[in-house]
Image (cartoon, rainbow, N blue to C red; front, side, top):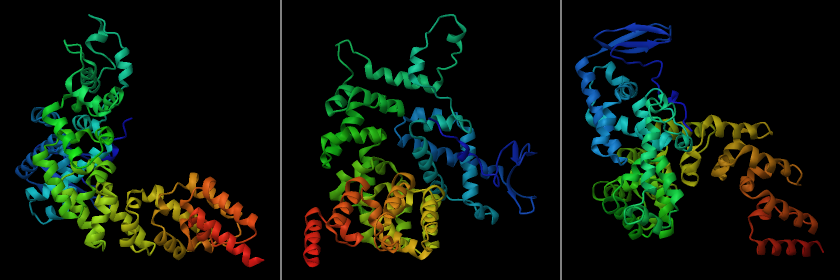
Length: 479
């Protein structure tokens, strides 16, 4: 359930600590001063002093950014402050992140502005939130060691025996479990009136099953404490006013319960206005929010950085608007760690990035090593040139989104049994987007039974009526 936190650890070439700086098992004990460690190519180190006063100021800035970020996810001010007080190691990590991102500034002795600090940390925090979601607070408090999370069902089954060792120090009921159990209890607590709490009744009337509500609270315990009149109901009514169908509300709340913890006047509405200025079609809000509910929970810096990247890649204002409306989840992709490296990869294949971004922005959320390179290699190993591959991806942007073992390989094997040359796939790579069993095989069987030959494009892309009309016309020409 919990992914490794190795990705959150400090990079080996940049390490900070007020006491010990570690690199490749070498410890430098620094009792009072803090240094930026950087490895040279020859394995030695160059150290540049970071003044303690500057470090202290950066820590306070990092704490402020983290506090605001946690409050935006629905935590109260008191809970956010308690979390910060338990998270010294994570705050140090954020400062290290600053030094890593802006290392060139430190080398020339330039201090960062508050805006620069926020711009560096907020997208990073959003990346962590996307990866760890409802247990982000526990990740922050326990950094760099992952919290031990057990199944709630197992905790519920644990008998509580007074005066036993287990009751004093339970091996399974961790802090995380206790918080979740307390939150889950609010779903099933029966009031003196014999009814469920008002916020649970309201959600059930919206169409949410009790188990679905429990699942939301398991993932995001804070949702159990949201006020009906103060938080949940205003957001639901706001979504309904935007044109979101009532039956879609449970899905949206399940995907992003944090929406109910965000202020309408201070955050949601201003964020929507900001996105509309960036190009989101205001008439499409209902569809956009249903497709990607987290969109409204991102910071403006994150939103702006993605839009700036799209413009940088050559998209027009109109096309940026369409990309944000059709594929709002592109906002969730890190510009520097996902979008830009992917763009560089496609450029290395001589692919025009702007049209690809416009036609298939979802492709830019794929792993280069896990998805893109294997597909490229798949075609190269089957005799296609790099130019052929570039042409295919240019003509069918979604080509790289298909599964190799489940989609492309079976369709390739069947393609080899057909009467078409391999070059036909370069002309019509959309072949891989059609169902093998429901479209490709039946159409090919009908075509061969009729004793005629159609282009691969004609065989698959025509409607059923036009397909049979063309077959009839071909057959009449033969006679």
